[in-house]
Length: 305
Length: 332
Ligand SMILES: Nc1ncnc2c1ncn2[C@@H]1O[C@H](COP(=O)(O)OP(=O)(O)OP(=O)(O)O)[C@@H](O)[C@H]1O
Ligand SMILES: [Mg+2]
Image 1 (tube, each protein chain N blue to C red):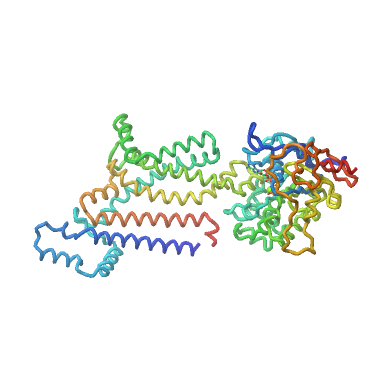
Image 2 (image 1 turned 90 degrees about the vertical axis):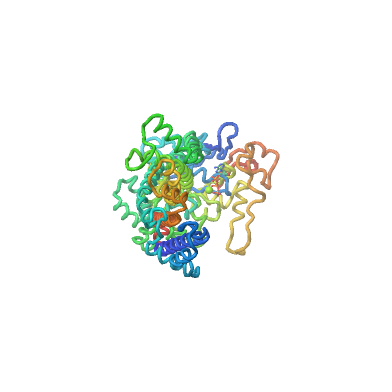
């Protein structure tokens, strides 16, 4: 287990460095930031002075090291627009996004795990077909379209739920459900496949030969084993939900990181875009690391290996 | 022999794959009986329906597609009339499995659940059928591991399947089977997947168990060679049918059916070179269900005759084995 986690932690660091490097490179290739910071008619001396202040006249490797050094102490530059540290802006909105993504994940799991299991147990019956049909539909519908549909029906037509803003439970329902649909469909498909795979294993036959009832065979042996691949896919989906939140937040005016990112892109507020990228990448990698720990806990081969 | 009540009496068992006109018969009137405290071996080449027979008795056939379409599987529980397993309800079967009838499978590497310690997996049967607490069941599991010859059983009980070798895993599976001291133990090629030395150890263990518990064993194998070591009686199967049966001594020394003769002729002997490839019987096994009338073996039989297109009679020889073959009738 230690070796496994050490390797995963190393991979985590590599990924983070990779992200930072890409951010740095993009920053350097996205044009001269002084163009954005200064008026078009600013004199050349001012421009040179600013370039010197920003360290842009240093050799690239040195700039890279400085950049990494600043990131290490949490300095991702100031927002051009808000004149505040970009990282602070992102962290301020992170809880709202995490709330949205977590609520979505919860909804996904509540729908997907039982449905996927049922579909596997009753494979090739109408239950399986129905579950599979629902999941195909869920995967086929684009999030923005679903979101608008939800707003039209539940907010405009029936006036049941608010369509925008955050802060209340009711305001969370529509965006979280919309965001949940795709991942629920994916998790359901994978749960079905994982449970089906386990149900064909020899040890399931032995469990039945022991005289265990179907319920015990399913829960104690089939689901427990299927949980190992399912946990992995749940982790990936949670990362996907963080990304998907960008669109959902825009549609529902949810005050999270996603909306901040979209606005920052529109206003060419590069430090904020960078900070969002770095924070999301970090969150994504941390979740994966957590999933790896859980995976190792569930799997004796790795836990003891 | 006739007076003694059989522990398990399989009568005219039929199993098919699929439904309706496309149904393929896989077991075609299989009959045999296992006497209390005795070992009956079922022998036959791969695909002849040995595992299907075992799974039918356990009622663990993969349904669908496989289905029992006829016959009776009478199991004597010692109280009142024998129970027909072919038609018993799920609940009855569940109570019987692991308690009165236990099964050891062909593949020890995958037979155990990878996420639970071995001790828990053995204890599970005791918790289920004997109502033991988890702690008591674990203590019994350690004893059972000791019994089946697993060294340092206290430690081993806490280990997981991946920490066990194939032979040790099969011992653990045997311990699970023995936990409730079943009246009938079905062993489906328990040593096929093991290497030769381990094979011999596991076979010896099974013989010891037989003596100790006086349980009946239904021993399935494709290897005529181990039949002599293990069994009192033997049933030879070919393409879903029994072609010969009788006491081991009689069948091994005077096989009546040409198929049994072929199987016995192909037993490796000590004086032959190790690397010699055995060619048991000429020709390939035809797909099960492809020949449905007459003697199923006629396509490969060295003595095939015109009359073999008709169903052969079942004839008992003076030695005590009975075979289904036209030739046998002629010779007696
Ligand atoms: N799922 C299935 N669908 C159709 N036919 C099957 C299926 N499973 C098994 N069979 C057929 O049933 C026949 C009997 O299989 P069985 O497993 O009983 O053979 P066996 O005698 O145990 O062979 P082996 O020595 O290889 O274990 C085989 O010929 C096979 O073709
Ligand atoms: Mg078999």
